[in-house]
Length: 414
Image 1: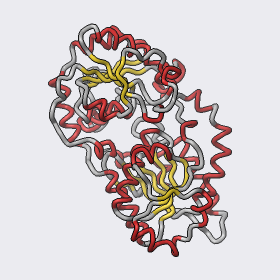
Image 2: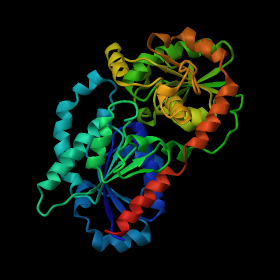
Image 3: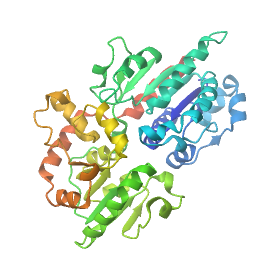
Image 4: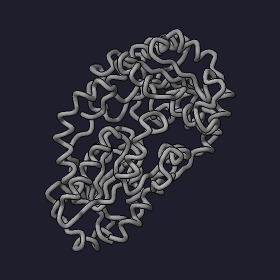
């Protein structure tokens, strides 16, 4: 089998977690590949463990896959190129913050497009504001190339067209060769002519299939987000709440993204003396009996793990009102959104959106210590576990394995 040249654009922390699981499945399938693009190489190595060989950019560019195919297949080597750009710079929340990145993006886009054009497959994960213009640039550049050359363009972890900017569904259908959906209902929002496939939700790849309730540990997990702007807004509230609950005999666990492990935590969070620290989301959640979580992927993670959860979120006022005007959903927590789609097919048919499908949500000024503590003391555990079971049965396992199989089948025909 020839060595697959795989271009990847993965900016978000969660996208890199899912990328690592996909690459692990690809390694297990003994598919040799070189990785190019924008991704968190440090995080990938932390998750994948020891990598047999890491090719630098020069080695990767000069690697002759036809000469090297026997070696990579027999020794099961996986080659990594140097990532082109650190995605940390693009992890920013809010409409205003994005404006600052526009000049950097335009410089980077041309470079990435040139590299992608030399690859066999280009895989884009999440971050549609970054990835859609990049794909369009790749297609434009490929049309100007003689002889005509274009990598197979695949989008995995699609943008939330069911929440806002639905026109992106038509755009992606036109510019991508394959769309890999992670939600059962996503296909209904795309044209019937699009090549969209449901591959399962990647979060379930790392979550054991269990309906068991968490053990009573007296541990409460706090996840104030993976972006520094989110942490600045929410952590002071979580910090005071943790101190209040500590007086009731509870132990507070602060779950910090692995990306911050070697950084100055006091500069990011401030005073963290009230917390036990964990850099492993799943380990921290599994030893907890309850979780307070910032909006995002983490709310779905905690729910699927069976940890009773309360969502809290605070954004800059301008960003909040822009989002409120654009996003036509009753909730912002992914578990609540997904279950509402499952139960009512569309948010518009939910007769009583004030009743949360799974867990409570507190936004902006409502995300305060008093409200969060009161919701914790009156949490409906029976409702949570009943609805969590429904959600687990609705979503599918094996996303990374499904994607790896698709990539391997493509690589066989190179």
